[in-house]
Length: 357
Picture 1 (spheres, rainbow, N blue to C red):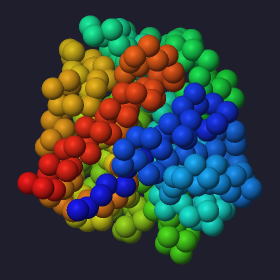
Picture 2: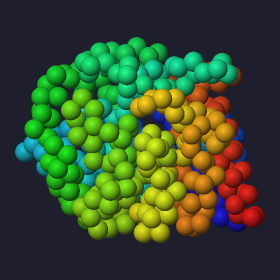
Picture 3: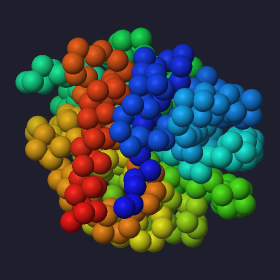
Picture 4: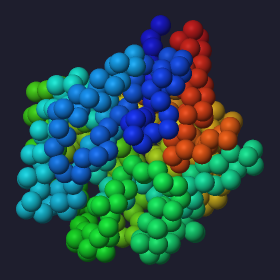
């Protein structure tokens, strides 16, 4: 029986109310998807800090083989002359992660904001709460959005929303004013061409995450929204080390994206080392909320998604993604323990049925 390389995202002992001991108790969960969150974007991840994180995880009886994320400095995305310095730092970080046994780096190439929601604690009918996006409620001013996100975080850090980086938001937007989608893609190719030889030599696969939501917002370009974008990214550098994180929730936010078809196209090409498998519920035009993982609870057919992975002999890493806060839990938005643990059990149940069927 093929086992999924099931993982669980963890934000570290200093900033995650969930313990490694609790993660280890989730059936079939052997992998921790971790990162260093105290290293400024663009700086080299120190070997001693990487090794300390690895030791924490392995001492708890778990594995650390996927990092999410090593975020990319804005100078690289904008294409400034200083990008070469930050690319050199990124290359050194890849080498350091390789020494600790890391096999996959999940990352994104989104300008300014990694992801957007308009409500981090939307109340659902069953008494739980979940993150929601409703474009009709999106503030016109990015600074107002940032204030709402900071206030909704309830003291937790939000991945990709580094306060020191976003402190000068107007200046950051000004720096991107001439960056079109084609220019961003050109800068992405420059980055890939520079790092791929190191990835191939040290056996670390890059897995870019889709844009979330998968559409341009605030005048910022987006280059990973759909299948067509994936084909373009694939052609930027022809290597299995230039891969994708297929996030069913992010791509699924656009109902036109056929998730099983995307899986069936790119997994056989060996371009998908990492999967985020989650469900969302459409509640109107350009509006959705995160949901529990089962098909009955959202708008995505999770059986069809898992069957596509099974039919293509997927053997990469996988994790549940954003869930609800349930059972009175009031943790980091999207990253509570209980709903993600239920999600894993559900995905593993689908997988066992597919294996035995």
